[in-house]
Length: 175
Ligand SMILES: [Zn+2]
Image (cartoon, rainbow, N blue to C red):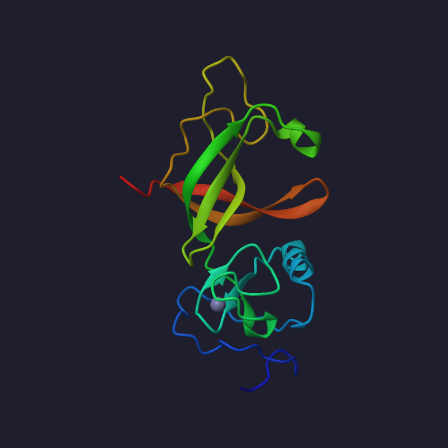
């Protein structure tokens, strides 16, 4: 492997056949704490997932070994997924707590990236009616505009002083 980005080390997997959905691998310190790498990326509005070079699986959340084959940190590389995902489950939160209270009602969902991993996040930008007299508050005004199987796209939002990954509905997936 050659070097990239001003001499920074290149992580394995750069020549993957999955190039359609994989953006260039960013060189990161392989010894860096996985959570730090992840949140530092989010702060730059870059979403990084770990990919195992031993078993070719992606994983979320970030951790120090592969959750599929137990390969060590040295087998894990950081890749940027395409950002597309599907809603697997969701719930409308009517009374948030702490930093989330002002955003209620909002949708918390389990979304599956096209690459495989599932993460919990918010679905934002919905324009739906609760049917209980609640007006437009926060990102969501009710249930009905999101469904299991809907396609969503990754984006970032500022919440509680941190840049966090969220998803925006882009279309219906499963008929
Ligand atoms: Zn693995």
